[in-house]
Image 1 (cartoon, rainbow, N blue to C red):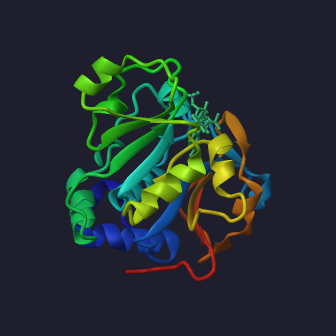
Image 2 (tube, rainbow, N blue to C red):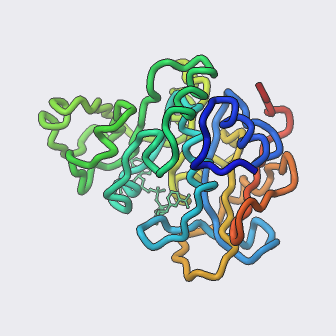
Length: 258
Ligand SMILES: NC(=O)c1ccc[n+]([C@@H]2O[C@H](COP(=O)([O-])OP(=O)(O)OC[C@H]3O[C@@H](n4cnc5c(N)ncnc54)[C@H](OP(=O)(O)O)[C@@H]3O)[C@@H](O)[C@H]2O)c1
């Protein structure tokens, strides 16, 4: 399998995706990317979500999974919790140590010229206007309740879009983004918010799993939503490096390899 750090072309990006997941993920629909942890070969119901911080185990293939999904997204959904947990989080396709140019070339090859839009679901509590995720490659939108107290003038000066809603809701947000023309919506939220997206009728079409199976101690924060367990693997999982496996799951009839 290709080394994610040595990618040079859009074609190599697609080749690595095919070998990591058995086929190219769809160009459309809603995709959830998450990293789990558990013993090798454990059923998905027994795996838990990895808390992401400076000490969590790292893999270039896991970084590739996230960057590949970002490269193909029109809209990305995260939460205020993620901003607080990851104060260094910033959005550029080279931000996780992988070469940016081939990922950008791959993005262009899918017909996407502009950056994706980044949507952050939050009550607004503890929001830091200087957070690097608010000032990266995608334009940031804060999706907040009407009464949220924010440093609004400062945020607007910084180019952040503020969307006040009566009751922000992850399902309504994903549906709205799709209906407004986002062909591919990437969901990077944590387990409490993703749970809503798998309630029937599930809104997630594809789940890209990175599973840490190694011996390093990990902090874990919740299991996969029950609805996610109804998705089917498209291909057997792959193990490109010790301690990690990767799998693409999807809903029947949603595969759209291009
Ligand atoms: N392994 C992975 O791939 C992965 C991915 C993501 C996260 N994580 C980990 O998951 C943990 C956090 O998980 P979590 O489940 O607690 O967090 P989460 O689901 O990402 O975020 C919860 C937060 O989302 C915001 N939110 C959700 N629904 C909302 C709504 N309807 N209206 C307004 N705001 C809303 C709120 O933010 P405010 O609190 O700002 O109001 C809420 O506190 C962290 O340890 C993180 O590292 C892991």
